[in-house]
Image 1 (cartoon, rainbow, N blue to C red):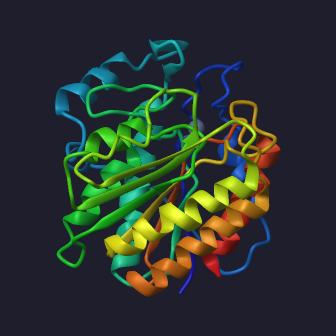
Image 2: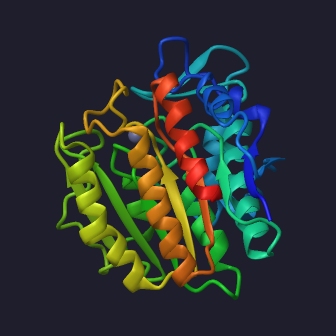
Length: 305
Ligand SMILES: [Zn+2]
């Protein structure tokens, strides 16, 4: 069985502007980075359905976004979140792509999955698009997975350099989902302290600027991964942001490609023990195109092995 790479050209249509870090070139860089890797199958991302979106976002929220989409130029939602023509389709392909990937895995048609899609999603709260994010894809994916009678518990692992405030907000009262996040603090969006524990299902692992590989790995080895193991998930989803990389302009944790390979291997080994190896990953942040290519290659190499 192949590891599937989910993508759609619509994901390049969301264009927040030429000076914006969340560039239309990001997914192209990721796909170029995967070039030559063996055992991968590319599949197109379908659009999310209204029913899938409504698992997380109220219909009024999404109709408001779709009505604001301009035919040309950009419309600001907040100081760093924008809509262009094509933004709605891009976000729909990203959420729909993850739901499709989860179905492929649970139906035994795929080994693991990586969704090379954008815009990112983990900052988006049920009623607030923010932080470059429109729909919260990983939250939609987790809720979609829980509709499958064979999946009672989903663990979401988020190693983006920013805290996934939106994902935390969706699940902080839902004991069927464990959310574990490592992120730089202080940094946008400001949430993600260790005392934010939800109903015992949230584990935040804040790191300091300059912490590097050693402290990142220690946090996951001693706290994050054991928590996932104890939770006994039926599926693991990864919010795979690569902006903790040493080259990234937005974060200062100073990780290297090998760290992304390491954390992904740890997750996959844990998944083999607890949930028949079922792991689906989705691109979140990562704003240096070169680092995005090499780090996502390391991530997918580990996913596929
Ligand atoms: Zn980020």
